[in-house]
Image (cartoon, rainbow over all chains, first blue to last red; front, side):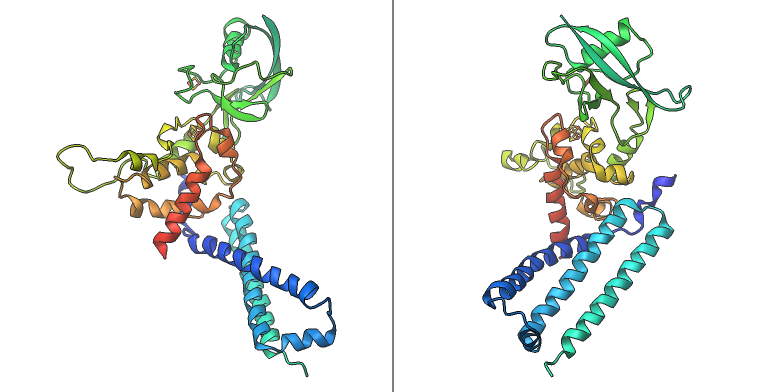
Length: 120
Length: 234
Ligand code: SF4
Ligand code: FES
């Protein structure tokens, strides 16, 4: 009875739903990012301007939301592929763990950078 | 009368080390279907050719196979639209081949059983029937017409990659009961639906919708089930 293993790792509704939500957020934040940098800002992408912008609380908030959404969305994308194709439990858990650790590391370094950034 | 060529997948695991194709020439009458041609081959040319068929009316679902790369019912597929020879006939992909065009359907039935394909309602039966209004019936979007031929599940790349995935046919069946106004089985079905091998394996590839010989929409049904599971949860 090899097929009996469908019970483990059940659930997945949250990951699925939140990936859709972060997808929507990404459409908004990416558009915002693109429009601002290339049009509203008049193409003025200089070191000065970027550091100025990254020091304001509004942009810090936008970039934090952007960061969390991007990492979660991408992570879920990779986990989706793992769930689709990798069925050997040991390989699966290794890959899943790697993706989570990578996601954590990326999020933490990103958050630290954004929060502590000042235009000194 | 026109002579048509058929290139047919042949494999007998007892004798053959690997599958091969064999080409047959058949004198076909106007109006014939793929199944008519297969019968002609089996009855008059090569009795060893093996395939399933029963009703030859598109209702038993036993003759599903792949013709020129697309799944369908051999008894429903007319020869006329296939302009080029040879017409290539393969067994349903994604299943183990027993012999020639006959595949092992057990995984398909097992997935079906997992979604508890029956009416679940513990309420005391009413005096007469459990009434369903015409509007409530329309909610089911004709999903009751499924003949369990497996053309959809066999066309699904998610199923090819994960043989424990419920697949479009079983999920359509789950939809058929979950969206039936008389059914109260959600709690019993939730675990197999909200599952790594359940609803979340569907990536909306829509092969199932194109494969279904009955014009049903398993992809749409899966979307509605996903919405239901998410809304019931939060
Ligand atoms: S949904 Fe269509 S293709 Fe799938 S098993 Fe039912 S009748 Fe066959
Ligand atoms: S023989 Fe019954 S569906 Fe084709």
